Image (cartoon, rainbow, N blue to C red):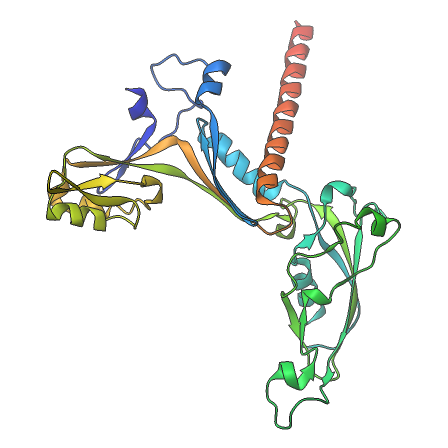
Length: 345
């Protein structure tokens, strides 16, 4: 099997072929392909496609699916952040029960550099090196300046809705100096926590600690982290005339276009990465034998959306650091096992 064919997942009208991965990454039955670091360096690449304050899209090229999935799982579950862990409720006369309110508070993403805090075990006392403290003190009352007959709760009452912006950071120890340039606060100020009516009050203290998404989803620094294989569309035979228009309509906008060559309309693939692989084109008999749909097995399109706690480009760097640390642990364990076997002999 040619290299191009064995690195392709083939999309047919009624099935998908060549989907099974190799028993060992980057190896194939009947072929001797030992791992070579230099050849891996030549084939491996990371291409940054798009970066925004909250999102990043990049291509991971030349690796096995196991590596791509490991990176995805680390992004979701193993990068530490700070989140509200304990809620000490002093007074809550609102309609939302204490435990539900505490759960909603815990899911508010907190802007704080987790690398500057220590891990806190359940039995440890909170300190300024391991814990961030917030206070929530809010009461609802009538707005004396509201117009007679006003029905909008936001105008009729004061503090009818409690938002994340009302969480007040209480620096402990030298935290005020340590985080003078970047005070600890919720990422978003407009997260609705609960609603109150006149006479209702909430008073509580909140303790944030360091954790990872593996322990609880509130610690996960990403809203989504996903990947897909790069679509590949091959036109095997010219598609012209009205068929060219029909061909382009089978794909999402931007995938294919109609060009005019020598006065003849002709279909052309422009950007296959925008394709959703709907296989719509395979439903039309006039395209039989003229088009081939595949996906590149070792080309992964990653889309990562940060919760805002960590910049998306920094998330990738931290995830790779965790992956390398895991590799070093595995290497050390393997070396120890080999040494023990040699000692037994």
